[in-house]
Length: 420
Image (tube, rainbow, N blue to C red; front, side, top):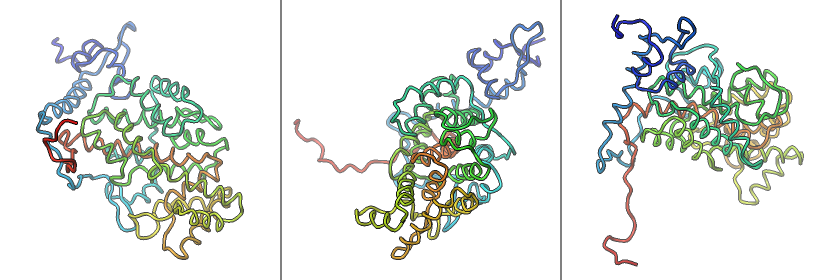
């Protein structure tokens, strides 16, 4: 019987049809992109020819897109000020939506992994769990463990992502299914490769439970873990924030998903973006230690510093993410003191300036009440936003390559200057 009409292929035949090495075929199996069974006699594996053919057809598309990239000198750049088309997040006056669905309603109804997977695929899979491929997790854990003790959370996450990328021979595969499989494994790896701080969890535990064990030594309670999971879901995306725009630029250049996430982490690693909740954490810690939020607010204003955790330029009223998290924190007994301090900060500051709490203040209440370090909110933000960066990368991979190249407006000396 001719090879083309057979129902099953050997490992060598599957590799030839896919144009990859045999070990890559087994990597596809480990990521759920192919299924296999043992060959009779236990020698090698057999693969469904239809599955292999479908995977080969899907994987040809990105390479065709790369082949149509503009030639040198024809960058096809996006004119400055051109809006970026996206179907992921819409921000309204006091609400925001993921693919047209109220994000706060999604966070109330589903977990982080369910919403992230739905955002990538358009299909909701109840109870979906992300698992870390053993080889990638081992490389990421070793890289994180090699960092000095003073390394920050984004340092650790960046090291984990780079190490996982180096361990993944399929990282350059930009087919949609491959990118989604990479994303599921990467999110789980990021949440699991950090040094443990608390009680162990089941191997199939949700990402929020795994992350809890990395952020605090306190035993998890259902209310707190649910609040952490909700925070992860709410923070998946927020339109074209600085880190997301950076991630899309990397994806436009056809960087693989790990590189896209590393780019996002680089933009996130600053006091004006991902680290903002740490400032609010320290403020609440000081307010609790001094027994007075008023004194702490006064000190901030006297030093000419803005009070952290308040106001958001995209919302006229309260940040809807903060509103949801404060409602959950209100039902957690051990969060009562930090929550009262946060509300006191907001009330005092609002006497003169009409500002409302934002998500950074809500994350600070969670981190303070759960005995987490000041950088915990930054870690939560980074892991959560990874799902959003991947969603934007999937959109960008479907666009013309290298389109996100704004034109610079030169302001230097006129040309033909003499040599210095």
